[in-house]
Length: 402
Image (tube, rainbow, N blue to C red; front, top):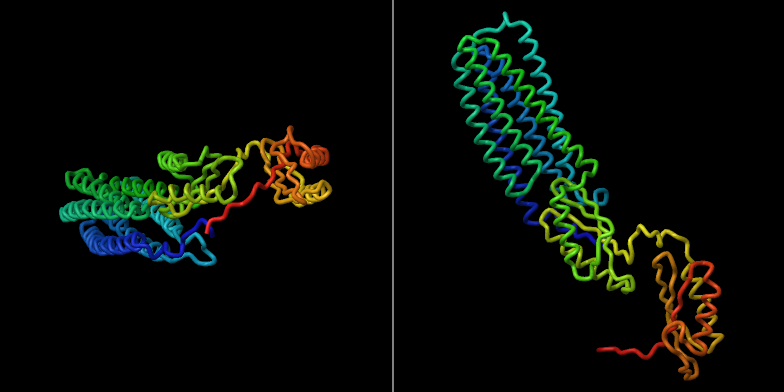
């Protein structure tokens, strides 16, 4: 892979730091949720609060989602292999999709249960005061967990960890709704407890849809946002020798970005110089921390002209004809350079005179002697096939440094 440097990707300090933070913050979330889930469900049953039990089930789903995050973090840390040359970053996208589905299902179930209770208000029991105390403790704990996890996620720039952090924030909001519902029940409005449970289910379902949809879009190669695209484009255009961008495509691999770009350069550059410019452009974009890889294709002209898609005389055919013509005119063919530009074919025929012949001149239209004959003959033969211009150039000598 000429444009890849994946061998040390998984071992980079940034990647190792990211996965270490993911493991640590997720285990913190797991233990916090274990304690809160136990308290919510046990006290919810004792205090006869449907809203608190629903919030406990929500916390239980958090534990499941945290283990999914751990598995995804471990999977995405694996180095590229023969079957996955781009690495395993999309474990994170798949995990985010799975989290979204879990939340969507849990939210729908809680919403259904809450609505069912609302249809039979006479069966709603009075809630015990201890339920309100637990709800407030859970609210404070979940908000603190959110702030801790978001700071960690932003430090290592992990979309999966950001999603998990906002999951904790949604838990805090649902706990606030639960506290309000329990408070209303204690004030005599018993219907507020199952109403709070239904609202919690709606909030959880909405969060699950959002995370799942975004993950699905990344899995089907959604491009990056406009600001990131502008930054990448500007880095390419600032590279000396890059005259324009013919095509720019991006897609996400987990939290990383893969870029595919066609750059426009001087049409008559050598292959080696074009390759050098491509490497310079790639290096400029790779300076962005989220870029995983950049594939640079060099274009001498815009692909919209369609020159490269047309059928032109094969190089071997043109070179063979030029060699025969040069021999017939006492010239030795040194090289032939073909240029496929502007819906046409141009040829530079580089020759040497035999037997000390120096009757050569550069250019077409003012060439005298044998070189003129070679140019005219090539034009006559290949003009119907698209050849419209021939230059015959003489080798003046070579300079070599040691």
